Length: 112
Length: 114
Image (cartoon, rainbow over all chains, first blue to last red; front, side, top):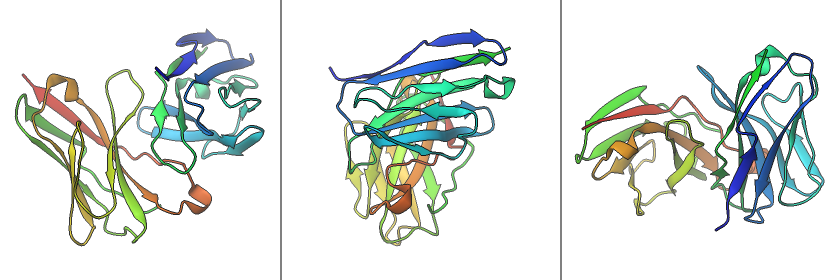
């Protein structure tokens, strides 16, 4: 069955370190998204991509970057982790032309 | 995207129907109404969506008011597994600059009692 996976599921890192969160989907979806979820803020969009080599900034993109070298993967990189980036991160994908998004299980990131 | 308003929380008993309301008084004619839910410690999952007519699927029903300024997600027989946060989201049919993106509000926390 097609699916969307995230790794790692839990990560603890230190302030200033570079961290990369992986997202892999096997639906062959063109659209991929990264969200973060914090108490009191709900889910907020970080970056998104409509296809290979395409990336766009979302609502809260400062301190994050993404790259799309193939259809299946959209890794999220925190260039220099900050305590404010402690959060749960969700990746999602959708078929081109639709709004139905399929979400991964999430990565809980703690920055000490 | 037009704004939606949902109650912060609702409670239900197992095996009973649940009606989750959503107000969207500024909805435009091309806005689809989407519902997602998020079970504890999981990512959101798609529930249902509609434009004008009522919709049914294996998970739920969506009842849309005639003027489209409100809608109701109906769970016909709540189970403990339906305890989740339910999000009502409007999406423009034609997308425009917000194509494909979902804007999540605070949602409604549904508690189901045994």
